Image 1 (cartoon, helix red, strand yellow):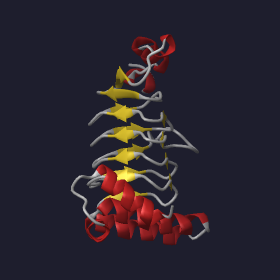
Image 2: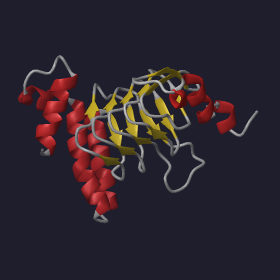
Image 3: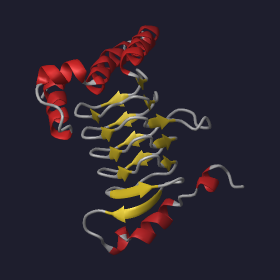
Length: 197
């Protein structure tokens, strides 16, 4: 499936207000930002980094969505509303991911190399969630609104809060996927990540 065909299908599937392709094309900032990113990323990967950055900044002005041209974003990602959304240079976003306004896939300022999150297939990142550092969000995980996530999130769980903690396990619950064991394994602690206080 080509980018546009898949993008229109994803918007229609996830946005009850979307009616037909022309309307989506003209009114959806998310689809425009993702299409523009394809070109910015092409420039970035072909050693026209300045042109890639300038192109990304132009579309940031038009869409209020900032995607670094180095970020890797698969087809089939859905951005709803999008205002204030930021995706950093080394972020990876897989197909089926849903991103809402105000989300940050950012760095902590302490890491080098891979500095930004990897969001696996089918994850949902709610409005104003902040995902910081080279963490991994598991497939079909859900991040609650305004959560601050600084540690890996397992597959098929919901996390909420500051710092984010697991509050629900989706699907079949086995002894290995029991809530308290998963949370203990994550070692989720804002203070641990910040080096202790």
